[in-house]
Length: 634
Ligand code: ATP
Image 1 (cartoon, rainbow, N blue to C red):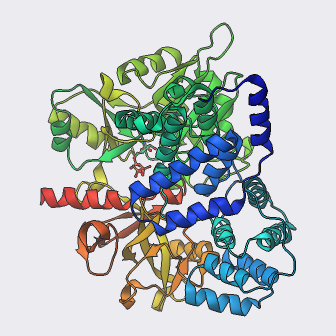
Image 2 (cartoon, rainbow, N blue to C red; image 1 turned 120 degrees about the vertical axis):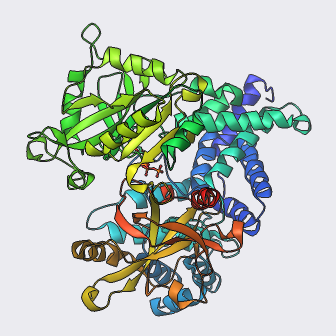
């Protein structure tokens, strides 16, 4: 770090604080990224820019820039920070602000397919009478936040007025209008993956801290990337991450970014497997355990230091309002220490429970529970919470303890109670027949199958946000297919005919490419829907229809079969079953890898997955993994 005298330091900080960063400086960088396809070069552009900000500006500005880069306004778990405005409101704003009729804007949009570019073109074509004050990063960030948070009956007008103010201030010579509109739409689509932003941050900090940036050891860079990734998976909050890296140094980050009750961590995920013998091969010679795989909703239960209980979804959404019944009984199961409940984080599955027959109810029953503002006295669908892991206990993170030890902490400090709070049923065995019986029993007990987990040593540590080989899911129903269901994004639909007239008759589904941020088509689906499903899907999806496919939808433009009758905003995920996967001349999943895309054969609708964010859909890489595994078995 540059050593400054106290006076110089004060002056330096003072200048940094008052200096505004023009928004066009940021959009110039976004332009550069958009024009670049090499991931390495993109990472270099990102890290150089972050480094420049670190040197010349404040941490606070860097945090805002990072959020603008990933098109978010705060951590995932903070509510009401979503952008994603519809095309109607944006067309209205562009039309009003740039004085062009909305029919013209719409026409341009049909032709160009990108509202950002249309806004940019409209801006450049508009004569400017006087030069408005330039936009700066703080201003854009604050206005976007106001727009995201504005609700209620005047919100539409408020949003349009804020958008207008910003659009008017956009510099006609830069790409400000283009990126502002794309931000408002909820996607920058410059091929910048979030993992690149994390790597960019790590590199920027290493360079910032280095005495001589020309002599940075590549190993150090890799180490710093691992540290940043690990810290972020424990505390998925850029502000905390950046502030701690700035204050304590990048290599001390893990001492300061550790699990904290009240901040949901990204859950550990499992890899699919197709048979018990595959499990035995994988865990050969190791001690492992099998647990029932409950079919409900993931619930990360946090007991804060002040005694507050909070429950978070798989997707880090705060579900406390949804489960007031769990909140009020939680403390009954925790053994208090001197009258005080210790802080903790539990990983659980919330399952619907039949209190008369004393048994688990299917997922469909759970999904009938209201999602928000649930009043405890109106609850008819009761919940039993099945705890399968403990990640933090009494001020101590436990993720680097073995599963055996974590279980022991759970068993010693929590008291299960039938039908309300139980530990996941488990069996430690490596006998094929015994496991087969246990799998059958799990299904008889209304579970989806088994979760198989490493029990001892490093491989049994809890790995936040990772899809790990140390957790395998064995789903009974899918053993005949590819081993698992897929969760795909609905991007279009086909008009229903015959019995389906008036509803959509089929849907176009896509996987999510985590590297490019694009949605790649995987299949058309028309099977597995009841009449009620089709009617409610029509009601749900109709308002999300868009006149032009998103520029980040990858589909075959030449084949009419692959082109739906209507396109949607990406808002909904279908869980689907497939007989197998094959290379296809029309569909596009993982097409960069194979030349052709991979598609699902005989896809069948199972349910809507509303506990997953759109970017948590099955990735194109996962689709290709399913395809490869299947190829190696056949
Ligand atoms: P993905 O498809 O991304 O793996 P998913 O949520 O669809 O995510 P599943 O195939 O349902 O994953 O399998 C993992 C899920 O199973 C967990 O997220 C959790 O909600 C649930 N689950 C039920 N019982 C257990 C258990 N004993 N241990 C771990 N997870 C369990």
